[in-house]
Image (cartoon, rainbow, N blue to C red):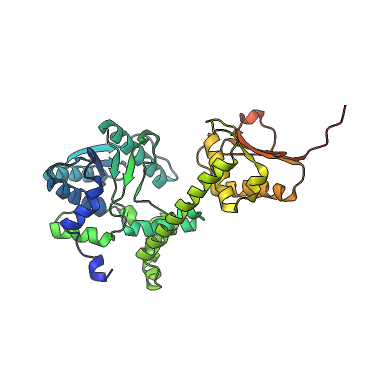
Length: 361
């Protein structure tokens, strides 16, 4: 893409192509903060819907986190623009005490929770966000700094489940994921539509703005937003293939059905013969399925996996028992058993234990 194309406004024909997969949805929620990207989402989606004889009902929602004095006025500005465009609007507010640390993550979690509630109330299955090519590139860099694995480095998918319990069955749709931010700003400039500027987007206390500052230098070396986004697409493709292989391995190695609390059991020798990545993911699935303490951390899962593999390689009669994310993993004799961990007070200290031959009576 040439520099001129990367900064060109989005045409009506292009917008139609971006939103076309959603034309038959009964309703859509547009997540609109009032910044440049989400304001462009509101403008382009409204124009697209107006050009259709039939199409989804649009509802724009703005989450007022209450973290800045300007946020209420910004929400009102979005409401006015939505009214001009013929789109219904709701403001959702984050009430209650805000955390002293991890504020951005907490705000993100609350934002999705509120949006999920709005989607459920509106009986809507699709929530559109305005994540751009630039956001995708920054996400890849952030995941790199955190040591993410293949799945994490795939960054954001064009369509994904809404990350909130209340939003079960609701999907996030990111129609602008391959669109540079500059094109959205150019679209608003051509339409003479103003937008808000969030100062936190330039605050060096936060990771994303700091990484945004090094992007020009990376682009000078050829690692621009488009290259990083291409890497993410290729890794998502590889990740999907590996997940299919894990499906096959789970069916081949599992002894019986996977009940909610478990146990999930595998043939230990067959598990040891799997390629490491497949075995690691299979173990992670079993832990996530039976555990009750939230997501499984990759680093801790890798440690557990290496412990298991070490015992299996030595082929000694050793029992291993570990807990992770609310699940208990036991290697005994020829089986690996994964089940819900007992309450912590009843759980003995994790250990290796050499099994003694039983005495004959």
